[in-house]
Image (tube, rainbow, N blue to C red; front, side, top):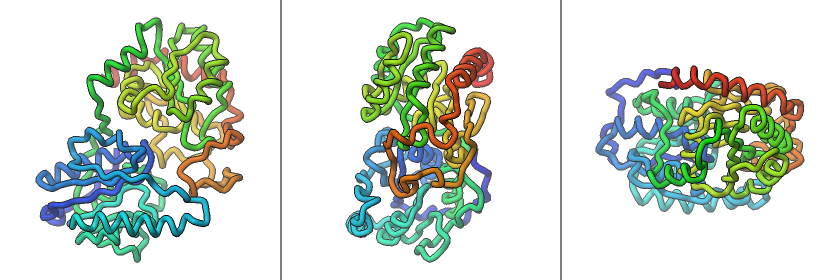
Length: 376
């Protein structure tokens, strides 16, 4: 829960009738924006709130009651190439000019307010502009970068506070339909023991564990506790699912690439336990209250909110490393993801054995009654 920030009511932008919120990031970052959007709607109930969101993350906010309109875009396509700088200039100018026609009174740039998004806010030219900046970015309400690691949600709360709005401290919200809930029920079928999900994929392969070891863990849980195992992931992660499934003692329920975002939320909601790496799946589990065992690579869990909690075991054998120091390919911080299979299990995860993960999973399954009492 974000720190309570002092927001004098007299500074709140009640006169702002047309608001743009820039949410730039993958699924987890977009999920982290939902408390800020809810708090913004509560503070400005009569205002129109438009949200600029990546097309790949649109499903997170498509049913949000706090948003009047989603404006989609496809992200930069040449981040690591010589054409990248020119592409950014063209995209920001074109997109910003189109957004400027809506005459926004207020623009908020939430988490991941990188230089491109700061330039976009300048082009949109709202009367009030707020976001994280060290200065000289044209923000009327700049927020100093934090000296300490902070999560996307904490950063968003500070951006809101800059314009006099307090983040309400409530839950991350995920909206699904009855049809998606029925699809999840049909996919999982009848219960034959604890339902354990395994989500092996992540945007960055250096955050991934070895798929053969996921298979060992799944097989142990099938044999020891009669677990019904479901494999989840995106369509691009089907080859990864194939490796895990081939190594299992019994066939799993294969859901990778077969669910919408809403159906994935409903599948994870019904699990007794999720075993995963740092990914959108771990953020979904946190939002819907599903116990999890998270295998954390070299990143700092304070940035993603993946810290130990009563309903979450975090295994990080390699410890935290300075940002990007483990990327021998020089891609970390430049691209939005990397699927290089040679990077799986780097920076300590290769030392994490299947027995340790299986033991943590069985300990969590044994604690389920207490966790459910605490949640209720």
